[in-house]
Length: 403
Length: 226
Image 1 (cartoon, rainbow over the protein chains, first blue to last red):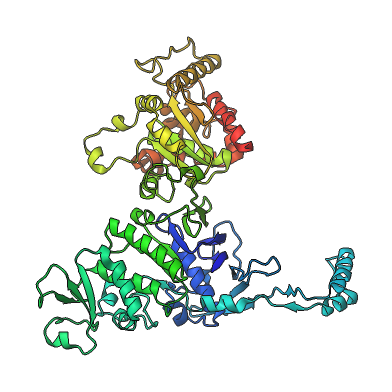
Image 2 (tube, rainbow over the protein chains, first blue to last red):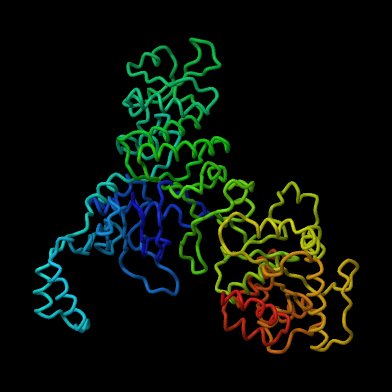
């Protein structure tokens, strides 16, 4: 898991450090900078993977702009010409000697043209001391450093003692591996229905492409889990993947869809109860996509979902969020989610430190910053307003009020 | 820290927000408007006049019933919370408000009027702990506070601060700007005119020209240090 990200000079984020849990839900006014946080992650992912071309960023769900627009440019602030992203992952052991993997990225525009790209100037320049180092050498070095004037170059003696120590780079490869496939999912009904195919990302497109193929490849156990979680949709009986296109030729799909995904409605008569993804309501397609995304080991370990509530009934939002929180834990996923629907919050358990609610806002200088919502310990179990109500009644912030 | 505001009108909310931002360095995000109610929907508002959801009587009602105060202060969110209660003294003698106005129109009488209204708010809030409350008592109206941004003389004794403010604003702005201001809603209008309060040094300078503004700022010193 990634425990922290420090973002500097990225779009509306001048300087902000975000501490993460497993499920991280972001709320805030339109334009507060929620999606910018997701994009900072996606950009870090692309940079760490060495793929910072426009196409690479686009396929991760980043809204593309030329570098000079991507770098923060606030009034009364000197513009800094690079973006700094620092990610810290969870240490693998609880040993105090283990340093948490950290990835430092500095992104610099490679030119000032309209079509200029980025170059990564630094990745993890920090070196750490191995525990097996010679402690006597370390002590000698510390004594020398104690007397050293840091405005001057290090002396030969310091360099000599330093060379005796075993230094290593932090284990950034784990972090890079976790981040490698990070992308922002932002579903589109046409992609989910198999009518539009703009994202070529595999195994699932960022707009919902390829859902039928992906579902077909789930194991039996995964399929059973998916169907079990789908039970909060009353009419849903089961899903079918028509790999041979037999249903198409029986007239179950007459439109433009290439999707081979079909649904069975439990209330309809046999023979007349199967309909295609093109004819299905939008909500079921979104839900299936999210469930599949969370339960598969082929999907990214860390990813983001922008506007998760799209097309979902408020009560369904709550049930979905609750299910996804459970699935994230069961399948070791970490997720960043944005929403404008208060009902999503009701599926969160904020007494669980893994589940976090962060309100993003623009401060008086216009910089995007966040505040984690924490509940008083004694509030556990006590009757109170639902989180959705607390939000709508203004207690959480994240609402425009200057009307 | 999060601060809730109960005010007579939406324009007052804007003025007090700007003062809190200048005095305490708070972000606007840390300020919550409790009244006038934003919880009402357009269906509710359809049959209500401005006065029905924006007047001193509702401030009194809220102080006495305390439903919004309690909800705000007893919120399950783990953070320090305070409530600023705003009231103007312009209608202090009205039935229900029941504050006798001291005779004369000197600075001393405005100090006395402030003391009497504060005592009235204490009475309306009786039975509640006073720690989380701060009073923003404007003599006679918050426009007298805004006026300190536009004139260098004492504004506590202005007989009609609204009129005085309009006059000075009209003098300072072009016809086009005055027209734009007149078309703004109360919140936007007062926010624009009182934006200078967001700068601490300006706010402190203004407070030297209005006793009731000064008292409000002084009531916030503890929070600043705490």
